[in-house]
Length: 192
Ligand SMILES: Cc1cc2nc3c(=O)[nH]c(=O)nc-3n(C[C@H](O)[C@H](O)[C@H](O)COP(=O)(O)O)c2cc1C
Image (cartoon, rainbow, N blue to C red; front, side, top):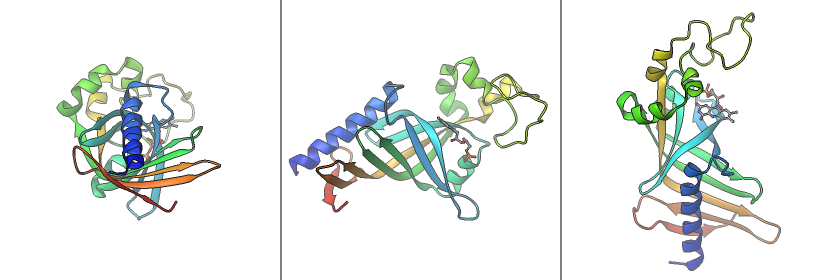
């Protein structure tokens, strides 16, 4: 394998494993792209919570009542964009969405603190709010702490390919990787 491709493979793997253990990792916030029912592209910020290098997978928590849950069920292929602004490095993860809920995400639910659990206990995301209710993280009217567990879900992106791009004053480098081969990814440079 091209030693430069091999070094970039190691670098991306190290970035992915670093994200889950470091709350301040520059790529912990990522952008999830989906298509809604009308085919309109929808993009939003998510926090990457878990990563795995074998098979390559990236996971985030969400409310199962949110549109993104339905959208990723309907169109199982999708992508997540990771970007380090200081290093000017972009990683596009392409793959297939998988969904976990109830017992499959019980451990993650248990690990959430009370404030985080509260977020899943009120009305569904996007429900109009009574203007007389102050905005904040206090329980929303009608919140039921026990229902949060049912609303909590985890979406995993099983990554099948990676489009890596590094921009600098002296060189722009872009490489595409097939990550479906467990032990080593096949990668090649392309024109940025
Ligand atoms: C900094 C930041 C982090 C966020 N993290 C998450 C997250 O991890 N999971 C999530 O479902 N929404 C997260 N959101 C909210 C989403 O971006 C989005 O506004 C919300 O989930 C509704 O999305 P939807 O209507 O497209 O489903 C975050 C927003 C911000 C600004």
